[in-house]
Amino acid sequence: MTKKVWFQVGVGILLALLITKYFLEVNYIFRPVGVILQTIIMPLIFGGLLYYITVPIQQYLEKKKMPRWGSIITIMLILVAVIWILVAIIGPMVTKQVNNLVDNGPALTHQLEQLQDKAINQKDNLPEGLQESLNSAVESIQTFAVTFGKWFVQFVQSFVQAVALLLLVPFFFLFMLKDHEKFAPRIYNVFSGKRRIWVKKTLEDIDQVLRSYIQGQLLISAILAVIILIGYYIIGLQYALLLAILALFMNIIPFIGPWIAVTPALIIAYLQEPKLVIWVGVVTLAAQQIDSNLITPNVMGKSLDIHPLTIITVLLVAGSLAGFLGILVAVPAYAVGKVIVQNIYEMRKEISEAATKNV
Image (tube, rainbow, N blue to C red):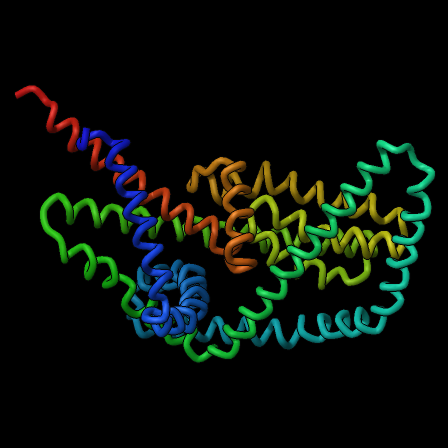
């Protein structure tokens, strides 16, 4: 019985639960380690994002016989130029729209309060069943708003921490650009034989999954943000640039992100002119159709091979456990875990076939 897979899995789960239990009971011993990890994790994530964004440029430059130091300096100059362009050209427009939004904030809040009062007054004239459904919908919206607010606050806090630790981001980024070929060998060279081959393959698969997801998702988000920006400007929606920037960041989150991004656009459209809600819906629907049928299949393909329902479940669980930051890293973390499990399964399958093979 001890050789059965279900028995071994059960023992592994029990051991994991026991280790977790005793780890939590003596967490004061590991608290300094947790503080160090919290300090490092944000710069490491941002450094990794910059690395996966810029490593294709480095590979292209080095194929043209440029030395490593030359490619790193070129990438840093490109990043400085991009930041300067964003600050010099887009910065004033963003500042102007933010100031307008702040100035019009009280008026927008008053309009929303009037809309809420109107909806509440009309609710009593509806059938009882419809009133219950409406109450349930309002409670769900309030719950979602509170949850999203917590996510947003946690995101802002994480962003502020990342800015405070900004000096560590270039350090990790430059280190990755300089020595990224050395990371994997230092791990798999510890092993030997077939185990070394398996660890090497697993690390290569993890790198490929992260590369495909980060590069693909960022490119998709950028293209969708441009499409949405053009559409919002065409229909004359206020704060189009701010809403497009929000869409740029929200579209990084698969499936859920676009719906979060379109919510403030619909509210602003209704307050500006109710018929604009229809046009915002048209722009959003057009952008999602272009994404679903043209952009995502050509950019991402089936590199992750994760079912949409699985992605939504992972995002909801990660949001509940770790807030907005958890949502951002949930899908790539799940993809990495899936790669590891698949490689373990393939290794066990090879061992089983070799053990039962007739000599």
